[in-house]
Amino acid sequence: MAYEFLLPALTPSAQKVVRTQPEVVTTLIVVLVGLIMLGLGAWYIGFAVRKPGQKKPAAPPAKAPPKK
Image (cartoon, rainbow, N blue to C red; front, side, top):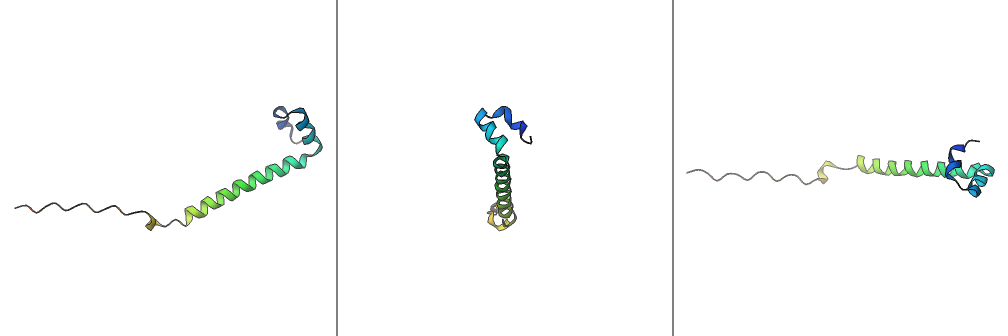
């Protein structure tokens, strides 16, 4: 069975479902991977289009008063 690593963490009724319908676990894994990829893609787009001008420039230092 492909999902034996899950069996210790599952209840007996959940084990029966995984044994009879393994496509449920496959679908869950595919959806989770897809959501993670979507989140990473959204983060990357936001990171890539960030403009350097969006940060406020530091104020120039004040000039010292002239000496007499």
